[in-house]
Every structure is written in C-alpha cells, then in structure tokens.
Length: 399
Ligand code: FEO
Image 1: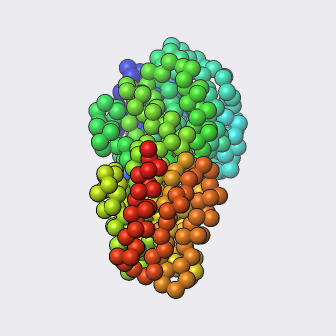
Image 2: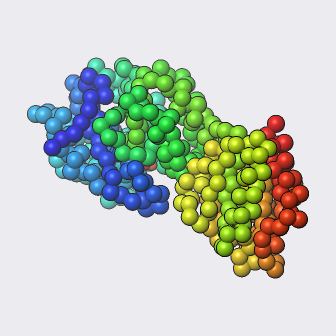
Image 3: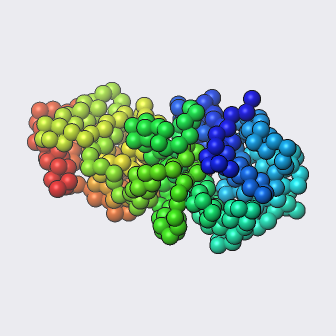
C-alpha cells in the first residue's frame, strides 16, 4: 500500500521511514528511526528528486507508482549520492528505462563507482544550470561537502521550493506529520536535528556557510530536505541553528561535564564540580559518563554548550580510552570556540590532564582555563579550594 503526502499541489513526498535500523551509517544510534525523503513532481514532465535507502525501496516504488498513475518517469534528479538516498537509482532505471538522470559530474562518477552503469542516461549539470519541466523551472546549485563532494541542491524558481539534500535534515522517522509546523520541533526534534547535523555535516562548517550565503540570495518558500520534516515557515529558527552550528558558535551559555571514571571517584569529582557550579548560580549543566554515552550524543552536546569540562582518569599512563575517542572525534569534526576546564585523576602517575590539554591546544580557537585539578585516587576535603577555583573560573569566563 502506498503512503504519500502532498507537499504542494503538484509535488509529492514519496519517501519512507526506517524504525528498525539500529545504527545510521552503522555508527550513530537512531532510537527514534530516520526518514528517507524523496519527492515527485508532476509537471508536463515527471521528475523524481533523489531516491531512498535500500531498506525502504519497496514502499518507495509503490509510492511512485501510485503518484505517477499511468504516466512514466521522465527525470530523476540526484542531489546526493550517499547510498541512504541513492541506493534505489538502478531500481528506478529498471522500472522506468526512459528516465534521464540529472546530476553533477562527480555524482556520475560515484554512480559508476557504486556499480550503476547508466552513463547513457545521464545529463550532467553544474552550478547555475537550469532546466524546465513545464510550469516549473529549476536551477542547480553546487553544495560540495554537504555532505559529500558531489552534492548539489536544486531550487525551483517557480514556487520557491528548495530541495536541500542533507542540509536541514534530521534523525527521527516521520509519523504522518511531514511539515515543521505539524510537529513541535523545538521540543521534540531539535536535539536529534543537532545530533544529525553535528555528526554528519559538522566537520564541514565553512561549506555549510557557503551554501547559507547562496541561500540568502534566493526567495525560499519551502525547504525539502532528504531527512526529517519539510520546512514551510519559521525558516529563521532553523537558519539560526545552522548559522551557529556551522560557525561553531555555541547555542547556549552552559557547562557540559564529560567524565571518564572506573570506580566512581572521578564521577564523584565531577558531581562535586557540578554542585559547586549550581550553588554559584550556573544551572545550565549537562553531565555524561563518557563510557556509557554514545559519542554522537557527546558531540551534539559539545556543539550546544559554551563550556566543556573534561574529567578523566589516567589509564595505562594515557587518557582513558573512551575519553580519548571523544576528544579525537571533537577534533575530527572541527569543533572550535569552546572553553575547557580539565580535571585529571590518577593513583600513582596522573597524566591525563596534560595529555588532554595538549590535544585541546591543537584545536582551533579553544580556551583552556588555568584552574584545574589533579585528583589522587579520590577527591578530599583538601581539594575544596581547587574545585571552587575551577567553578569560579568557569563562571568568570562566561561574563
Ligand atoms: Fe543522508 Fe549524506 O546522506
């Protein structure tokens, strides 16, 4: 049975949802699922914008068949070649052998690399190229590294619909509600939108900024991303988030405390700091055990908060391995402009503080507060002044 929705009078969402996949890209947990959006335009020509992940191909094909009715498919625009969107290209070609595939040169190369031998069907386009499908005219805008190098977005100049590829996407499957004003995005979606953005596209902030600059020159009436809700109003809300995320500016003044603990003593020190911060008036705090929290959540929170406290036990004379993984992922994703406080623990040769400091210093525009602490096995009353100094230093640096 098909399951589609009208986006406009002649544009249909023909995607689907996967609530069974445990790990997106086989890395990121998606407990609330994910949607793979595809859109079908019925103009004088029929045009499909991107396909979907293989897991929902059957639903997708039923959707297309239902919307097309007796018509055939004339064009398939491929904005992004990652297999969560491009996996069904060959299936579409098998069913609609006269379809023309519109994509960038790099996307055509990726099609070959992924084993789709359809070069005779391809119409290559580049930045600024236009096409008319009847009433609707579109312009193709390159969007390299959002999130792969071949990516482009397609803007319908007739009705202001932007097919934005991965940009403005989010984890979470759609539950019948398709548009941003049908959900409570700020309450139910923003954390997963941030986790999606920061982990998938976070590394490519300058490229996102370049796309936002281009987007600022066009009159957008609707944003159709490849995951998550379609935006048809309140663009300022999501644009503001994208401007902050892509420029690595924190969303909130607040303290993220990430601790790596073996027997609870470093956790106790982290609790002590959190309590001191709250007593001193800083209540915007989030605290996570690095061993129990998937990296993708830590990265998302790191993009959200202005201050990050790293509290790590020393392990084999190094940083506790899960903490090291977290710091290296922050580095890989190019996080910048944060203020750090460092807490180390060690029973005979504490090293993690210096090693964490060295890694953070290698990152761009990071500030590391002077106040720090070496905990010898467990926090003592003698450590109270040092802990107070860290809390004061964090609060002072927020002014
Ligand atoms: Fe949703 Fe980069 O693919």
